[in-house]
Image (cartoon, rainbow, N blue to C red; front, side, top):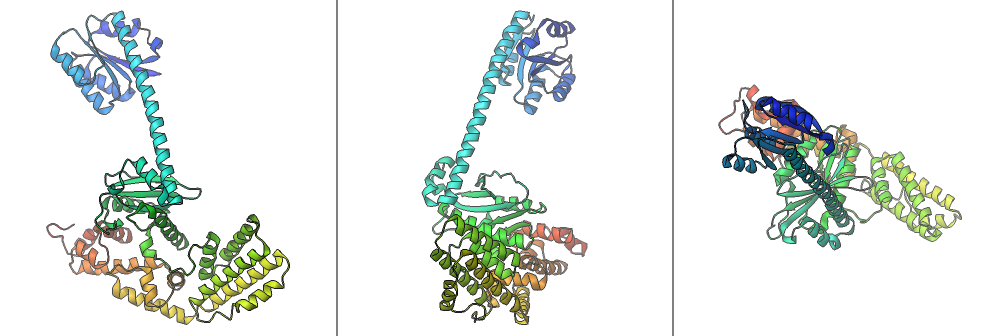
Length: 514
């Protein structure tokens, strides 16, 4: 039910309107009355009426001043004014404030009923329009989300549909970035330089960032220089137990799926190493795949072997076995798929030792062994035993030589902490596969590569600030080219901002210091 309020400094007018009008006839409840402007404004704020009927001349605050204050705080309030002064200036001001009716005193029942009828018709139309608008906006959002999902799953063929839903031309879009959310649900941002569409798959929440602007020739959008996105992701980083994994930014919408795959790899890294906050694919790095387009369980199997994760290996093989049954593969095809898995495992082993023959003999011997098996159950048992042997060999080769590689990596990180130091670069320096190196690093150091690098940078930042270096200079010297990001990381690490830390050590900030 709608709520109405009446304001007039004449007692007889208030009582007459209160008692002589059947407000329920219009589906309206009378919320209250007031005889001066200040009390009226308090009543509006406390009772939030939908309709206001007010005299213009009242003590304290006149009716037009009251309406002006009300419409600033609650612009959808319907206002009706009445007065004994038939002056054009009052009418003009009332119309300018959006008043829907202006009644001259004396107020009669007929006048009020005619005004209420007109008011209710207007409110009904506005409500109907509001419902239609909500439905239209919901439909529009649904179509936009569907167009984005089509882009992720179909690729370039879905670009034109997305342009239509965005209301943009191809040349107005400078790039696209995909972020996978893990943890608490997060609202999308709004900024004139970027359109953000939040979509969901069966397993993930995604933010698809569509950067606006006209890129130059061969120009790529740099996510780290897109300040609105920086501000947003830095805010998300403060949410505990949440991960926001971003893929790289590409200038073509057709590469959105590629950015999505990268974001998922960054997320897997973050979850495995219990990282929280923003994890970038650029920091995690891209492994050079000898076998592109691996299935989900094949990727999981490779990852489990590198991590020496027996439980993960078992789950991967379970998924493989379930797939072969669902796809109703022939025995010959099952043999081929098993051999493929075994040679993927051998490739993983060769990342750490040159000779994998101790765990996996030649293809001829493997074929001979498989040919002696006449049931799927025995074939899967044979495949599992071979994979488990590979995993045991992986565990055995994690010896002092590999740990020495980690120590070499920490020295290299100490020497190059001020540069854009990605995990693949460090892994290549010590001659190791990036994914295997990240697992071995965590095993040896008890901390992930990203956290260890952050620790080095923060310790050097403290030293530079104590020596008197300005905050923005210390930020750049330690590999942070966004000063706000540097400040947030520093404060999270040491409990105070870089400026406060510098000042606490007798190095007051200079003019213009951030």
